[in-house]
Amino acid sequence: MAFIAPTAFSDAATPPSEFLLIRFGKTEYTKGRDDGDFMFDDKDADRVIADFARRKKDLVVDYDHSTVSGGEAPAAGWISSLVKTKDGLSAKVNWTDKAAVRLGSREYRYHSPVIFFDPKTGRPASLHSVALTNHPAFHGYEPLVADDINHTQETHMNEILKKIADALGIAIPFADGAPDEQALAAQVLTRLEELKAAKAEADAFLQTRNARTFNDVTGQIAGMVPASEKAELADKLAAIEAEKAVAKAFDDGKLVEAQREWALSYAKENPAAFADFIKTAPKAAPAPASTVNAGKPPKSDDAGKVTFSDSDLGILARLGVTPEETTKKEN
Image 1 (cartoon, rainbow, N blue to C red):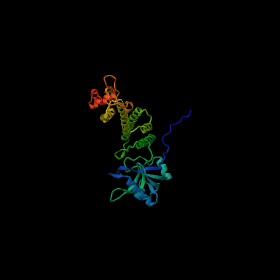
Image 2: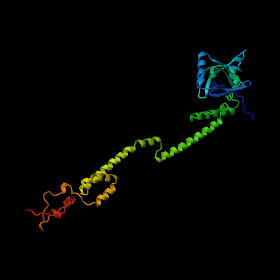
Image 3: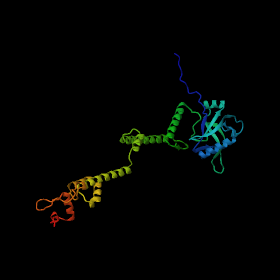
Image 4: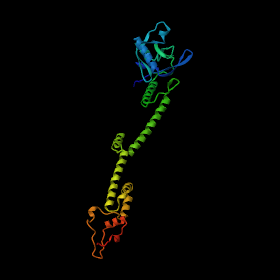
């Protein structure tokens, strides 16, 4: 059986067609023996893009800043456009065949832009060129091509983490001029725990409403009577029931006109107590006119006494007259 050797990592890497040229935030750099840093924001990116557009020509990518140092300066590629992304200013590039091979074989792995700064503000204003180099001045920038498979996988995973953070509204933290992926992962986990707790709280609320979704709760709320309208309706119903109870009490002769307002208020506020009061109260007024006999009270055949109905007795009592005082001999 023939022996098949494991594949060595000699496959050419694919050079990127777009890469992050200058990131937003602070970039630290080392130039010669001097260290420094500069800030780059959205307005700086607009200024650099506007200068690039004004020149109306592609921007050269050379080898090791050869267009700055002088002498022969073959192009490694040409930047056709500059675009803003959430991370910073990115460059879209077309590599030469030679540069593609050298990047693919990892002879060159980093980039280094030559930036002109505004002498008045000290802010980035335009680009002179970009170089392929293995000694970039900028700190903490990703290589244009990975050094091995594990690094490629790690970079891929880091990009996924960044996308998750962006979806959760988490800004990428930086440490020493480079993305702090450990801190970012911790923030993502914290946010996910918060969302998990919020979901549990929402589920508990839906359960108390016997609903599956918040749309169901919205429908329940839409069918509810506002508290103010409910109270007003209850007040009206209580007033109606009070009027009925008081009217019946008058029909039964248990109330007199002077008691009407008090009776309506009492029957409305405490209908049960009012009903108990009327049940035990004596008659104090005549029955309705339809139930009162018309004409003179009838005379008895016994000693000329007159008999009175309960209604008549109620009227006499209110007048302070006894039945005996009403008996008179007719002339």
